[in-house]
Amino acid sequence: MRGKVSIESLPELDLEDILKNRNYDEQQIENILSNDALVLPEIARSNNAYEILKSEAVDIQKTLSGKIEIEIIKDQKKKHKYEELLSADIVLPIIVFLSLQAYDICKGFISNWLYAKYQGLKDRDKIPNAEVRVAIIDRKKGISKRVKISGPATLVSEAIKELKHEELFGK
Image (cartoon, rainbow, N blue to C red; front, top):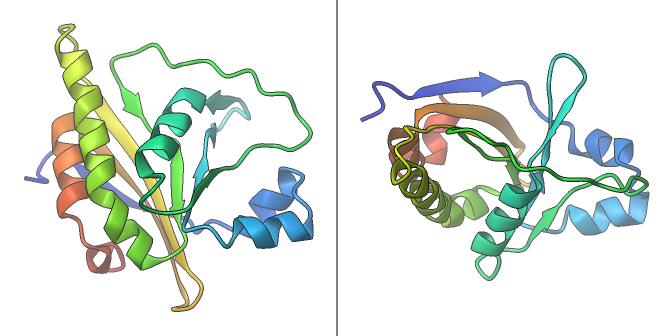
């Protein structure tokens, strides 16, 4: 099933550095890191521009709330103007799971969310690709891994549902 899906290892995330750069103080950082997952709606691009994925970040937060504690991370000193991406592609914000258990609980919900987005675009005669960036940082177990999963949306959806966290650490 994953023949056309790319699963690529990415450099680890330094969450504390990311939060400090977004102007969170030490107490806020401590509170944020007590969540099960974080959503980073700003995806840095190589030309120092940022793509803002607010609508997707809010959708993901709503989808996973009630299952785990999840928070959207944004710069504390900036006003945010969010715009939706207008394309046939489905790009999710970076989702950071702060435990292996949180990832295992949520991967099916993310897969279903992706498939629903795919259905909406498919019905408008668009053939979407999907890109999902997931990080798992389990401090208790000393594990930190980040991957990008990309390809046709239906295959990415299925790959996420089937992908076990043990497989991520083999990549």
